[in-house]
Image (cartoon, rainbow, N blue to C red; front, side, top):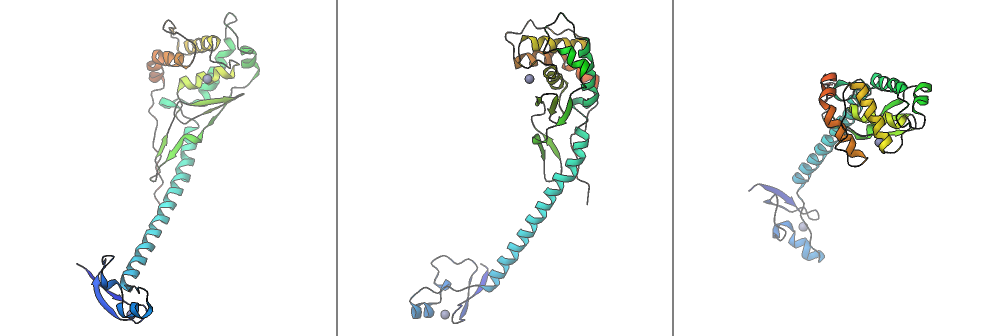
Length: 246
Ligand SMILES: [Zn+2]
Ligand SMILES: [Zn+2]
């Protein structure tokens, strides 16, 4: 067992004892001084204290460096990623041109279909909705790798869409229908989304399995068009952003 020199802080008398003596080991205490003062006087081990201090210092340094790395990871790659992801959605879809394309299609929205709050008026008079990235769902790890969570989530406020990085085509189309003035997830909303999907992809979307209007319908659409959409954009996009080596 490793031994260390233990010293009484009062009289300076020292002896060798294990580095980790048991709580009740008599060598922990200076008995003459204890009986003189009436209180247990504990011996100290200066070498051990110095070691412990050095260890603490090293740990603090390590933690500081780790925090610095994390800070860098959160800043540099985040900015790189932000530039990248504010342009690119799932499968390499370019978000802005796709938004403009869908918005322009709505200018031809047929009169026979239930209108949102003046769908075509909006599409004709207004610029395409602005798309912003929602950074809340980003996560950058210590190495600077970027992960996204809730990748298909998006929300709308008036003429603005906020999407998470790597948003899917379906989500974008869904939010654009909201921008066209369909605010509830009702039959009218999903008829408009169906029309937009069919017009954009020249496919037929089958609603025979729809039992009620709501998010379920989004999944029914996605199932039917995912291969078409994937094939169309089919450019795998980078999902990791490396920290520039320093
Ligand atoms: Zn003593
Ligand atoms: Zn919605």
